[in-house]
Image (tube, rainbow, N blue to C red; front, side, top):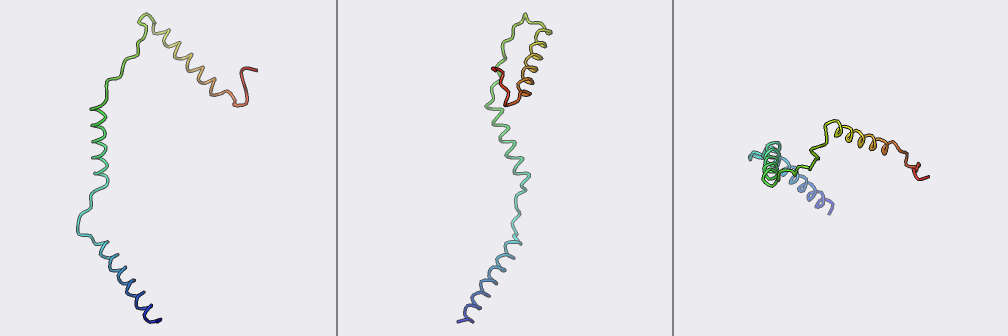
Amino acid sequence: MRRFVTWIGCLLGALWIFRWFRRGSSPEPTADPAEELRRKLDESRADEQASAEPPAAEPEAPEAGLDERRRAVHDRGRAAIDDMRARPGDSEDS
């Protein structure tokens, strides 16, 4: 019985080695992964461009001068910085 198991093991090992060598020497050329990714990227960009609508322009008050708009942007930025600097344990209500 021991010889039988040994022969079966050797045959399975030889089969595995044979298949491993056959798989490594594939005659068919494999596709270049970079080229495939480029193709997919081009397709997705084409889909995005076809389905993209022009962004709606935000209505701005034409009477607002450049200085006023700059001041508003800076004020919003300062407020955002103050919010980020506030500690989680601190509360402004108390």
